[in-house]
Image (cartoon, rainbow, N blue to C red):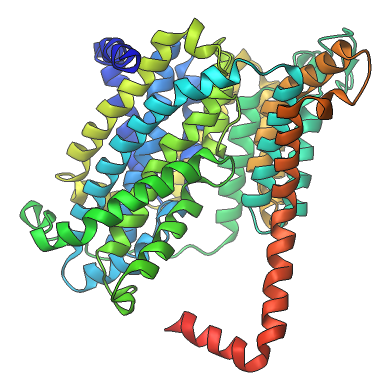
Length: 515
């Protein structure tokens, strides 16, 4: 009953004209961003963050959230039509979606994708609405030691699950923590690592770092690569052919539901994200199918499951960010930074002190899912043509918005210089195969981690045992260690299994994968 009352109040906020417009703009931009290869939602949110200054917090966050889940819709368009995923979470969709398009069923694949995304997005928001307040009630009992342990868990799970190399991910997270120490120490009042620059007394602005490492870093990496322009005539069969048959609906109904729950709970886990959830969903559907040989050859289930999973993961990723103050993905890390800039502290108290904001955001996600369904079905052909935009023009527009956004923060060229410095840092990270997401999370969580750490030591009179004497903090730290050890244990298990099976077993496994 309390959730229903809160949601009704949230709709009163979400249906205000300014917030409706913000949701529509976010969904539209997110869909276009999802269509464009190489430009993810994290870059788009970081680029548009400066444009939200001066707007109410709820209006701004509604737009940024719309970009986030809108990109999941848009990424399926090019994955199905031209085998070019606009977003990493849509890579799995190409396996069967493009095959359906080659068989003349591209419109049906797009219809299944849109319906699966709508179903998953709606159920995902419902789960978020029901579970988030309960999680907030539990989190209210957390003290500084538990908060510090939670932030450690957030960083370690991103390090363990966010990339193939745990050491490189940890290096990135440590770099973010180091950047977070620049400025005036909140406890002692001393300046740290400012090197005489007055502009650094307030620390390094998160927006500058996010735009630099994600947007400019990606541009520098993409310019280096040879990009082939897509010159394919896109024909999706018209609006009539977008709707799947009843047989398609029966085939994809349970994959949609399974993908929704897989995506939501994978999204709740910090670092897992939409990409991993879509792969998990595809694997599950292939395992449970009575005809797994159809997968990779145009199976509708191979489109419905992953598309449901990556959309539900966006709702799931919002849960740890809002309730625990731990971003569940790189994009929610940028949104987390936006909340802090608007004076909103993510955590359990957010549901008490800013209930209208939280429920307004939840209701706007319902509204946004309806908008995305309306946008994606009739405007498929229009969105698909965006792929043909020449990349040099696209690059110029992104750089222009980056510079204007950085300069607009404090009307200072110093931020512009920092922007290009972090653009080079992002390029170097990309060349070294070091993920940038842990760096962004480290920069966001760094000040909060330091504050919680020092508060814990002050309360315990300098005893480090406070982190292991409290059951909840001890359990969270043990869980963090498990995530740290997970990649190593999986690697050892795989190695021993291959040694046990020998060359014949390995060849057999490879043959199964090819089949």
